[in-house]
Image 1 (cartoon, helix red, strand yellow):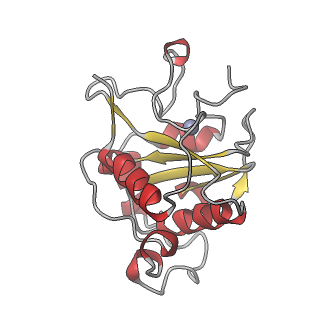
Image 2 (cartoon, rainbow, N blue to C red; image 1 turned 90 degrees about the vertical axis):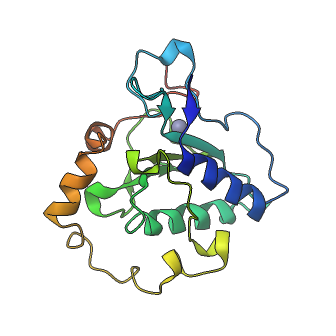
Length: 187
Ligand SMILES: [Zn+2]
């Protein structure tokens, strides 16, 4: 039976708590449909565990669309230290470990203008601890002030890279193609 990873459940709960007036309408959700099951996607259940490691959040957190941009930006900064987050796609941009979560152009068919795609690592399968970003907790990123000023490209050691690759995430990040089988236009 397919189920959303613990990290995804936790992030959704925190967002629901922080933005109680947001509406979970399509394309919000996590499970890819059967038509797309043959494609490689984090929305498909892991073959062994049935765990889905992706969630699409509608970008209408508040009537002010800037909120979604701020959230996505905070989440990608958190991803540098919270290894449960694999990559984030929003509004024609992707942030992944590949460039230490610096935004870069996303070349998939669907630019993700109306929703934020978040992929999780296997580390988030059973880890539902708090995601510590300012919009969700009122704290600095991960509860610390450092992180934002790190030099890009120098943070990830070879050790942490192999760690991430060990989670089975290399493909979607490196191809930089649309990994979001739930998105309209990605047929
Ligand atoms: Zn998606």
